Amino acid sequence: MADEHGTGLVPGIDDPGPIGAVREGMHVVDSTGAELGTVQDVKIGDGAAVTAQGQRMSESVSLFGRIAQEAAGPEPDVEQELAELLLREGYLKIKSRVPLRRGRYAGAAQIAGVRDGVVTLNVPADHLAAEV
Image (cartoon, rainbow, N blue to C red; front, side, top):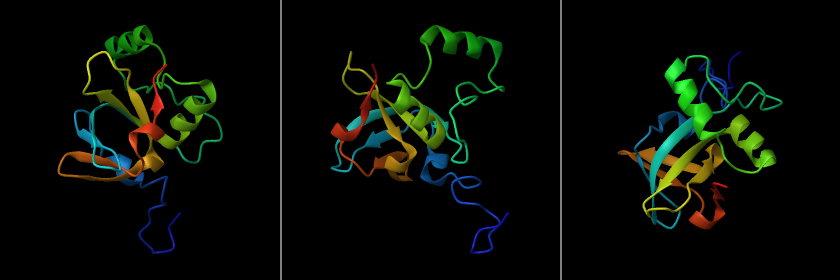
């Protein structure tokens, strides 16, 4: 399947957009330029998925990784309806700069770009989902 530009990539499926360049540990700033923290976790979604079933844990995760994920609980740790959307769309979890503050989640559509190790969001911090 090819796109209209003849690249052979289907946007959102073969090319995940800016979220594809996000790596754990990168700094995250919101649309106002405020530094929010660092990327704790990143999940590239499946835009073609109808449900979130099968999106929670990768088969390539080691046994130790699976045990750690199960102990921590399912991600994203938000209300079920939002969790399903984030799993389909893709998300990054932001570890706060402030100790004891809950993490926040940005959906793939909320990522404006990635440059020089910094993820810039297209929304202010108060538009992000907080970890429950």
